[in-house]
Image 1 (tube, rainbow, N blue to C red):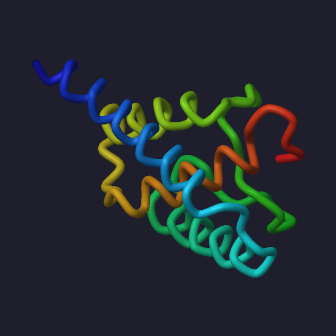
Image 2: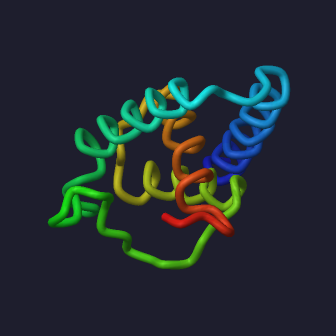
Length: 110
């Protein structure tokens, strides 16, 4: 039963994120910078134990170099929450999902 609930949660997150992105339209450069800064704060607070900042401060140590699409990142965030008990709110998950999809998705510079 728990597995089914987790799968449903991940699907709901992806659908909600897709709807928000379509309805809100493209973000300005200032909005993107603010969103990236918010994601970096979340990473520093909750993820940096395993994904520490790079020495030059330009990003984070990745455990994998495989780019993921939005659905892949939603699945990875769900796995981090389940397997490693990452204590993220829904807003924090959505902020990270946006950031990771943009920064570490297919075709991104990372």
